[in-house]
Image 1 (cartoon, rainbow, N blue to C red):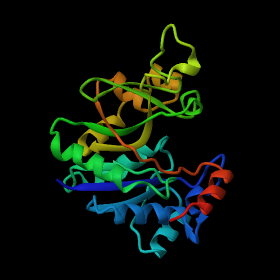
Image 2 (image 1 turned 90 degrees about the horizontal axis):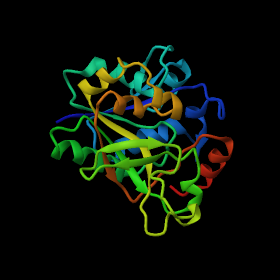
Image 3 (image 1 turned 30 degrees about the vertical axis):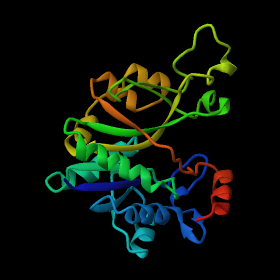
Image 4 (image 1 turned 120 degrees about the vertical axis):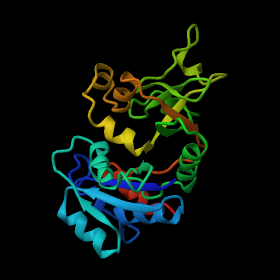
Amino acid sequence: MKFLAIIPARFASTRLPGKPLSFIHGKPMIQHVYERVIESNTVDKVIVATDDDQIVDVVSKFGGECTLTSPLHNSGTERCAEVASLFIKEYDVVINVQGDEPFISFEHFSILKKIFLTENDVQIASLIKRITTNEELNNPNVVKALKSEKGNALYFSRSAIPFIRNTEKQDWLHGNTFYKHIGLYGYRIETLLDLIKLNPTPLEQAESLEQLRWLENGYTIKLAETSSESLSVDTPEDLERANKFSI
């Protein structure tokens, strides 16, 4: 089984314009992400997918591989799928790597790869981590996940789920397990190419979570638990914090 990692990278960002090219410890962020994927030794090929010539130039200069994609894509998933379609006969699984996580955990790649190597019926795989603070539990920017006994996703929400009846919200973490979603995805390559043909769905639009479109259309998402977490960079404050982060 062969694994292709694709890093969608968009230059435009409302909160941090030019985010992929922001410097962290003397290197552009996209280079940190690319090199982390290479160093994980879990995939057979790594490609940056972008609609911006500046990003193409930077990736080429540090020796990475980059593909210029359509500027009309609405999501990183669509950008990944455009590149994946070029390799459908060569690779079995696509890993969609977040381009704003310069210190992404090697463990995350290993867990995803193991899922596909050991379970033949997996269509999509992703990661979850236990929530340990009320701040995370009640933060709408932290996506929560529910899973079945077999480890398949039941639902994703920006709200705290499940609702714990007859218990004060500040006590929900006492004796109950909640999970946050870690947004690293693996797809069978054929599944990825099918997903982008789907139209937006009511739950997706309500929560602004693309993965709900897949669930609403009957796809299964296998969720595996991880104990590690990485630092995402979305704002100037995040960038400042990343430059203080030890590597």
